[in-house]
Image (cartoon, rainbow over all chains, first blue to last red):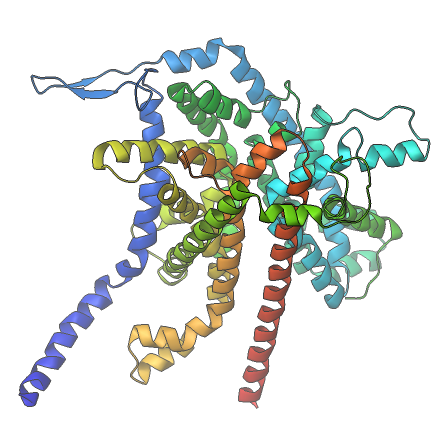
Length: 312
Length: 276
């Protein structure tokens, strides 16, 4: 009995082993690949399909794009009405341009504030660096929603900022910041600053400081060495940080919704309203698809740099 | 590196850090305000914390969010670790580029887009298969989706630094591939798994936009309840709730950082001892 199984064992094991050798890696690759295809990629196909449907009053609130008629033909009724609507109603173009502009300038301010911060961090001693890193990372872990809410406590009409400025006699009337464009900028900068500082710090920390010393020995002033050496070498960090702020900021919903006023129509907010308030799923899908197409460029750029970074 | 940078740089660094921290500190301060008016300091009090204990909607939402967070981050750690192993160990396989793209895209994909597309899928699935109903299940699936991305990136960077020869040595000594992985590589990447789990948990606990899209009637997570309260203006009980969440999460992160650093130091020490 025992001898029998022992004789069988090696053969079975070898063929199973062979199979594992050749195809076993699919056991590891398949689960995440299938999950992400099913729940991340395929949803876009559905959004694309429904963006060609028409709004209807039933559950779910849109018409069928594909239907099978009694004579077994598949009817396809593509409606371009939603996309035409996006082009005719100027609120979409306006909100898209507004989102781009807001994201661009907040990214720029984040960069101008974040670069010196990251630079100062990279020049500190190792022990200080670790503490500073923790200080920058901590807000990154703290609830986004709650941080936006906390900012409201500072900038509202009777908030800390106005109270302090009034007390010191710097202003006579409280500044109106809440529900304005300024509040949206402050919100984005405040929320996304760590996303800018961390990649910048990562590249600046790796920088070879002997290059700077060499430049100084050759008689270059520090600003010259900065422009010629530090800045070009830190470009990967600048790009990664800017993309990590710029792309999500375009689609930001919470910040314009909680801090902005009725004019601060960012595309994320328009999509939200279209979906939840107007309950127009096909138009909301069309907004999402159009938005995604316009974002494809920046996302591809980010992917390109990111993947290159991960491979090295 | 010596500490030498100009006072200008130093003050910008301090300013940036102050910008990041003052709002949170003020919020925590105001959570102890006895007055219900947000602009009047009525003395120190813990009223709003006690009030939370009797707030049924908030307690229910918190329980739901915790449950979703635990399930979703555990799922994400499994899928994310597998994806990280796939991407670091197998240089060529069909779908590698696709997997790389899908793992990195959620980091920059606007949440409104992810939310609406996933909802449309769930609605279509419900129509065709009668599953899943919008609520707990759909929120978990959606959260696993974006958390997997973060876990993969965390684990991937750790795996790249892990020495594969240890695993090969274990296999030469007769361990099966799974056993060899568990005995050699897993202990090395364990801190990254823990960090990935924690990061997923906080992201899941915090998510408002995607949850709002894919959720159904009756399933309100904590951020959804907070958002609807905040939309109406500042409220003192949200201050208390926010303070609890911030202190808890902050404490966990500092603790996790400490534990990871200690584990790392111990590992380096052991390597040094072994080399001697």
